[in-house]
Image: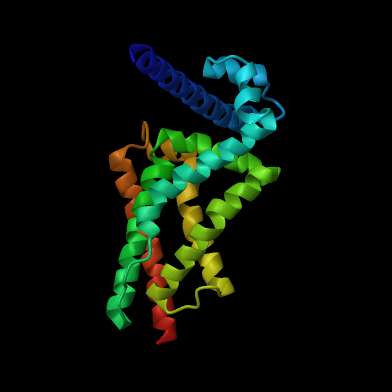
Length: 231
């Protein structure tokens, strides 16, 4: 009986250690692929950064390409977990009350986006990885687009349509949603310029509130202009 219990605990410990190694390899790869590029990063670099045996890359992922796909999966899971509650379908009502509820949901989405993309250090690694993939698309970008970009963008278009009366899949709506997202993304990719021009040491909670306020004002101004034009 005691031997069985000991054996069970040993298997659990090994499984936990294996998962920790796998997670460490993904995080190290995400950072290094973003900084140095896929071709500029060796499996030896990754193993050293993860404090893991180089053979564990082949064991867990089949090789460096499998590790890149695992990074894409990690990004999809992470952003879905953070964005999911904000973009979830909720009853919005009809008429002016429905428009107000939809715009309130957009406000919450902007706040969540700024809080993660701009203020969270981990988001820098994700954005760098994605920018590399956008410059040189691979199967990893396909996974990110299918699992993240397209469904989230479609949902944001639907919410924007409810807030403004525009058609959800109209070309103008899709472009406007990209523009709204772009406002937030710039504060991450242009972080150093923003810090210097604003005289900030970093982007913390207080700075995130200020950025959120400005982006919301821009979004509301666009929405007001569209509703005014329609009426």
